[in-house]
Amino acid sequence: MDYRKDNQVFEDMAAVEDDHFLLMTDQPSQRVLALKVTANLFGMMGLQPALGRSLVDADNQPGHEHVVVLSDAVLRE
Image 1 (cartoon, rainbow, N blue to C red):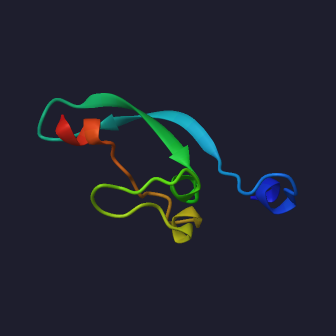
Image 2: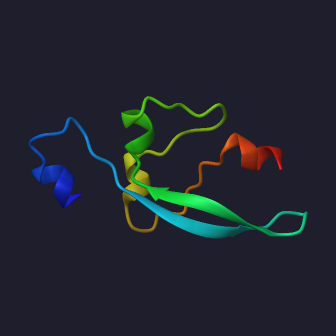
């Protein structure tokens, strides 16, 4: 957030961090690649979800960070 606030060069900035999670369904669990991102990433890239909602600024707040946007590939598995 400090980088974004102090930025005077870029139109917008977002944070992205690689991670892995264990996806648990009624099928055998599997490890999936994930990205932890700030809520503005999707809008910055001009992306809209096919279903549901994208991230919103409130999702960046403590206690609200457990929101997931699943890829089409994950939904089809």
